[in-house]
Length: 190
Image (cartoon, rainbow, N blue to C red; front, side, top):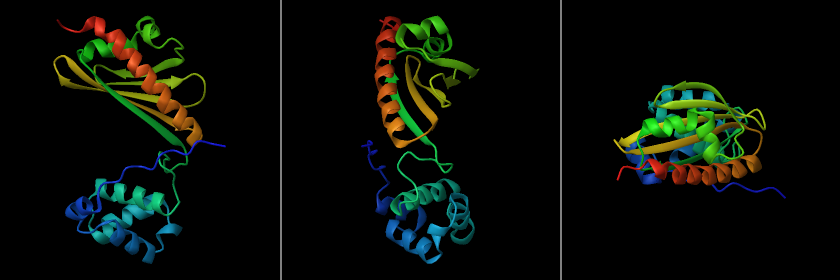
């Protein structure tokens, strides 16, 4: 039997109402009356923007929440049907060093023992994109400088085939981000 992903954490209904004028139940009722379950993700989001004046980011969030609530989309599932696994870790090392630990094959092999990544593109010092060799999924690594010597590492493993693979990859990336942190400790300022 497959692993069921944990339900997505949604913003509180009160906070949603504060930003959009309506809570979850009201938005769900509006979309149900509009036959939202018979519409695509794009159609729902566009309707929220054009007919109800919801800002784009909030329209996307309401749309995903609605799709999950109505069984149209599983947590972690994208509009195209694929899944994305996300993991993050904050490391007390400068962003340039963390970038090199991802970009350089030899250095990456030191913390990612089963290195199955093939670099597609890099935008120093912020972003790297990889192919994951075991399948057709893609890896996007975002590096955010929190301070001069602290970096938030955010990994998105996209284009996964199913929820089970998403759960496995989330655990995989959490383990390997822990390994990256351990390897990066050698570069911590004293």
